[in-house]
Amino acid sequence: SYVYKRYHEIADHYNNKNKPNHKQFIINSIKKNGEIISNKRRQVIIADLGCGPTPIEKLSSFPDNFKFINVDHMGSNNPIIHKYDITDTKKLIGNTSIDIVVMSLSMWGNESNKNYYKYLEEVRRILKNDGVFLIVEPVERWYSDSGNKLLELLKTNNFEVTYQTGNKEEGDK
Image (tube, rainbow, N blue to C red; front, side):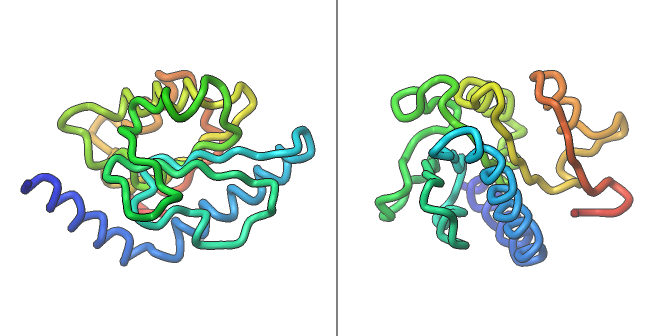
């Protein structure tokens, strides 16, 4: 469909423009937060929601105690990617069972159908109480005259925002 094609054209443009930045940010954040979590628990469980054809776990080496669950609605021939709608992973992921949830460019294609509310509900369901939600989205996608819609959305869904970068004037960061 046109919407699907356009979404992937935009995603490809964004990935090519920012390739080293956002993926390295996610990798570094997983390692840093995972190290802290592994001091409390043996295993660190990471859900990469909307991972696309190349999950984050394949972009770097991670400690052996980091376990990844890779989910994408399109699925893949890759056996490590589970084909699920990321708004409903109940058959795959239990309540409060994930230490780190990653959503890298996973929410921005769905404003017309408002799925991002459901995405955040699912993140809230699977994330442990002391878990970490890492989200990377293009800044310009979320700004309006009334401010940063993504920050408002996260706060409305009871997520504590501890780090952010980029603003409408600075562009993507």
